[in-house]
Structure formats: C-alpha cells, structure tokens
Length: 276
Image (cartoon, one colour):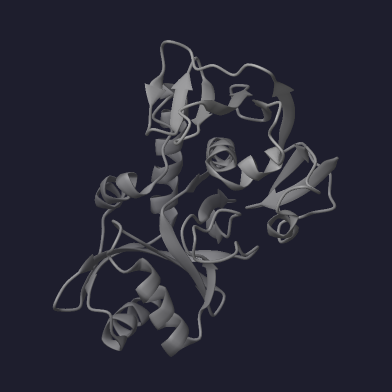
C-alpha cells in the first residue's frame, strides 16, 4: 500500500501497509499530491545484525557506514535498519520477518531521524521546542528540558488565545527568505501532531528566573545557544555543514530572544511587547 504524507511542506511517500499500524496518527498529515520529496519503502529481512563497528547515540540508536540501526532495548537486538542515499530522498527500511506493524517505526525515532535528515535539503531544521501560533505569528519556545517550554505555551494560550502547533519537535524552514514553523508527526507524549504552520516571528530561549527579563540575541549568540537545542546530524560531516548553514540562515531572518522568566502573565506581556 502506498500512502503520501506532507510534513513541513515536504511530500513523503510511504510504501508499506498502514492498515495494521496506527493510521489515525498518519491521517492528520495525509496528502493527495504525488511529488518527488521523500520516499520510504519497507522490506523484510530474516537476519538483521549490527556491524562490529558502529557509533552509538544511545542504547537504541546506532550508526554504521551511513546506515541507521534501531535496537530493542529489552532484547538487545536490531529491529530496524534504514539505508538512504546521500540526501535521504530514498530510504529503505529493513525489518524482521515477524514484525507485525513495520509502519509504526515511522512514528518513532526511525521516521523522525529520516525526516530530520531530509529537511536539511529544504533549508530547514527540526528543533526541540514548543511552537504556538498567535495572530498569524509563529513563536517557538526552546531551552533545556524543564525550563518551561510547555508552560509558556500554555500561558500564551490562556492570556493571548494562542494555538499549539507542536509541543516537542517543530520544524523550521526558510522559504524565499522568510522563516516558517511547522507541526510535525513527532509531538512527544503530550498529544497528537498538528498539521499547522505559521510565519515564524520569534524563537525564544528560556531560563527560569525569579525576575522576568528579555534581551534580543546577536546572530552569533543565537547560533551558539540554539545548537544544543537543534537535532543535528553528528554522524555526517557533510550533513552537519548543511545543518549549521540552515541554522545560521534561520537566525539571520528570525529574531531570537533570551527570556529569563517566571511562569506568570508578566513573562507573557514582556515578550508580547517585543512582538507587537
């Protein structure tokens, strides 16, 4: 079965049986158009083994010779292998013979990593943050875990009637010198991914503080502080160069603020004054 999704404006063709997977999560991003954006096809292999030489991101994600391996944490076995061309336009996913719902892997780390690599070729990045839409403006809150990204989004919803775009992994693209933020299929455990987008008006880096203060960062400061918040392709020097170029392009056309804040309305109003 062939299904087409459209995420961050990028058409993605999935050649796999989605009837046995969580199709309702795909439905939000289903599209009718057929375009040459990205193709992910699945095949079954009897023996999936991790090469002797590999680079570990964590105990479930490993790289070897440009192939991505997903490891079952409990079993310690390879459950998926993804091989792709240089631009991640063509991705072939190998799964075990007994895997009942291979398409579900696209909802998890395998699909997310493939998309993160592909969006690099569309002048974009995926970052760790919470994205909202307010009066046709997109705002992305970012920062280390526990800094209050979701809290600030909820405060904007409460006091400014903002709408959530994505609460974990929004995508950002620059199109004709204008930045846009998009919802993605990957929205953490907090809710369904939303197929929404908005012109990006600000990226806001957060730090908890007893006082509310805000400053606009220079381009160099913004790049340095956003690098740890961006999902960068450390496995490939060529892809990393492209990702950093995209990050620099994003902060060149997007105001980046550093907000030290409390979880209160005053923090909302402080940023609001910068965006009016």
